Image 1 (cartoon, rainbow, N blue to C red):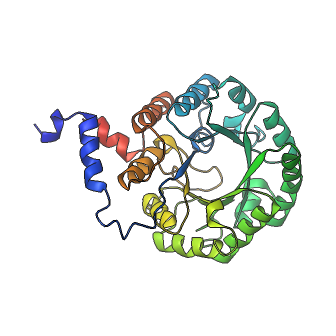
Image 2: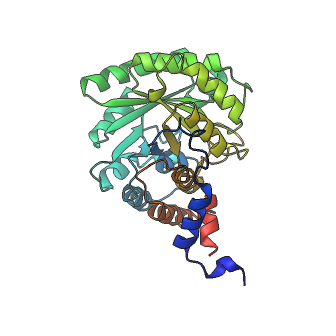
Image 3: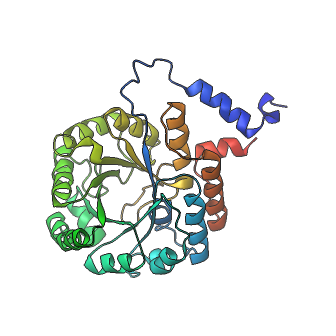
Length: 327
């Protein structure tokens, strides 16, 4: 019998934490003491599922995530069901979830109509989206980058009137399925524009997961020249297994906000070949091993990931959950 077979999950987790604690405090002194995790599983994680997930399952998933200590949960998307059928029940989900004090519940909105619909359901924040790739933007929202930004001017104006904060997503920051490699300057241009328009936080997304740590550092260093680093977030897909390394490099560059999806759910309906988002469980495990505070209960988070994986009949893509489930 393997020696680990008789160990409890908590004991093995404690041992693993000892091994992954930083040995050289000077080398890691630039790391933040706290990283904010933005949980995108209910929206970005589920939107690409072909089989419609029931409203009750989505609500239960969000409720479980709310009990984990996550500061932000992106619940749904107020887009047309024609484009994303999985999110057709957006209003019902937002109205039925149990909102926990201290948790910010957000939703993606494509236009002013979506913004007003989201506000009616009681969201705390909204998110808008563009991309650093012209072709991806046209495939995703059927307009140019410039047109997409102009479209969101009315959303930002309405949000300001209602005192609602707006987050901005920039997709394809390291590569595009149609254009290939994207220049850091192109990313910085869109990120800067969104920030100047009024987005308080800009999430930089490696939508198809092709970036490497070197790419991330170069891109973040360029964007930092135009947007304060404290207003930047990193959003990585794990297609090539680079997500955790990319996140660590982004954190070393000063970013302290990380998007992630429980159980590594996700993909992109407009980015062929893109695998799921980086698993929230794996990000939290890494950060805790670096003595970076997140406020998240890893055991409850793993349970939420197991719940949704079982509910949709998919393998849990979190390496941490896979390892501990074998004990």
